Image (cartoon, rainbow, N blue to C red; front, side, top):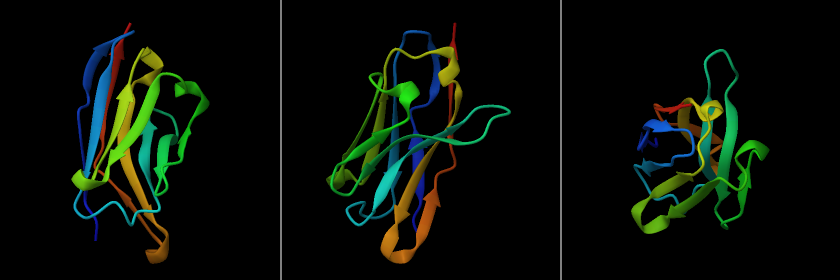
Length: 117
């Protein structure tokens, strides 16, 4: 079993920045993919950014150039640096991990990000 604990959410003004952290309860080196999804009120959960075990990143078009995902394997932590925030970035952000060899997906409890205009 894997626990993912997010932190760093909160309130920001449009144009501001926040950094989210996701700490895993075990080594993330074995995770096939780890990253972030978000869900705004009344909308489906959507992928924001992921990073693979080899370091390849993937972003939803709406955050490209503004958000950066990174990980520190020795800390079992993945980060999401969010710059130039927009009100439409307001959502609950969830940390996600997939371990292919276990056929398992893991989710954190979510952290709220609110961007005011």
